[in-house]
Length: 367
Image (cartoon, rainbow, N blue to C red; front, side, top):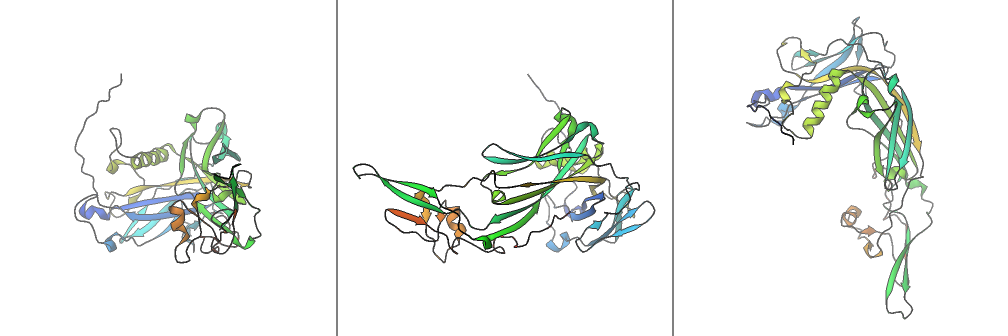
């Protein structure tokens, strides 16, 4: 039997009315790579909602080291720290709402040593697994992020032939879908890229064992990442105990509040206002160095999706193909009724790279 006992009390979350102008800092300093910073305002949970223009945040920012050396923001909106010394302490300084905000000077934590980046599959999904030695870790906690680049075909599905089959007395008909040879439509192969939206926080101590292997990303075997060539680059950085607790608390709150969830206004960050030290500023800016590892996957795990022949449809030129897909139908370019129904390729089923959200040229990793 398990019983949970706690004290319940009212807590006035300071995000109503004028306090909606409270700033939220989301940033990191990665020595040897780059620094980034995003500043936003807290969205009120009640009371009179602010005007949209009141939620806009205009700011400038830069990175300073312990000697006062300034590293300015580049055209990509980040600060290049690829040549910054790793033995110095750094901080982010920002000007916003007529005041100056900064993180404390911190020396970077050493980067964790990554060993391997491998792929595996259970026939349904593909897993990207990163591993490193626990006994070489400088910190007990690690943050993982990744970037992806892959080449895919813009056609919605592969080509099939639907054969009509009769029984011996020709009273019943059945259909069989056969995959056809892939035609030469190389102009429809495109590149695209994306990056993880948030760090994955890992407690090495909770995994156990000397060799640590962690599934950093997963996707279905029918996903376009399997079409031809898939690249992934994993970045790892060590976290201090405080930063891990801060990040882990935010993750727990995103999953909902419960008996043991800390009050949001009591999450201790490390950004302060120089003119008004008592001002409540939300957010945490970390300082670390990073390590990275890359791997490439071919078509080995690709699985073609075989359609039900009764779901095939020749689309109307005036209807977007996605409408048919959302209804569970398979749009085809042309179909010939009779004993055999060839399902062909054509421009109705193919779109160019720009429409597909990609490029003809292979992009470079962002970091």
